[in-house]
Every structure is written in C-alpha cells, then in structure tokens.
Image (tube, rainbow, N blue to C red; front, top):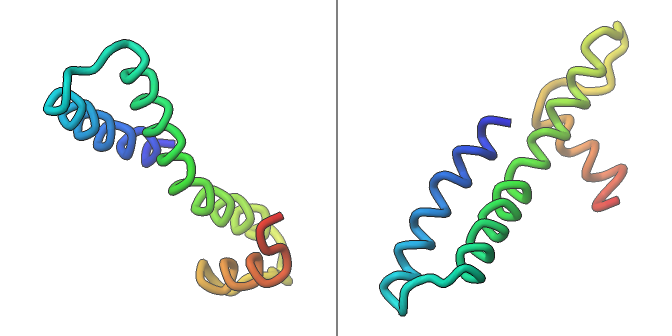
Length: 83
C-alpha cells in the first residue's frame, strides 16, 4: 500500500539522521532502522487495510453489515477485538 511506503520514507531518513549525530550508523544499525520503520509503517496501516477490505467485501450485498467506516471500526473492534 502506498501509505505504508510513504511512512517508511518519512521515518528512515529521520532515524538515520539521528544515528549520524550519535556516532555514525554501522550496518547493523542501518538494518535496525529499516526493520523498525517497516514495522511501524505496518502497525499504522494494517488497521486501515482491514477496514478497507471488510467494507469492500460488504459492498456487493444489499443487507450490508456496516454503515460506514466508523461503524465498521466499532463493530469489528467490539466483535473481534485483537484476534
């Protein structure tokens, strides 16, 4: 998803800049920065992807389960929590 890519592009340079102020990044630190930025981007965008997918699956049905994005978020969280 494009949002995940943009979040990574924002986080990585900022973190690399911080590492160069400290001591200069070595290869392991660069790997850690890349892994952390990918994990954060996934953590931020996964709930949005879940909502988008659930709403798209309901779009073809006449008796849809959700009445919008906020309603979908409430119902999914209430029924499934952090499954």
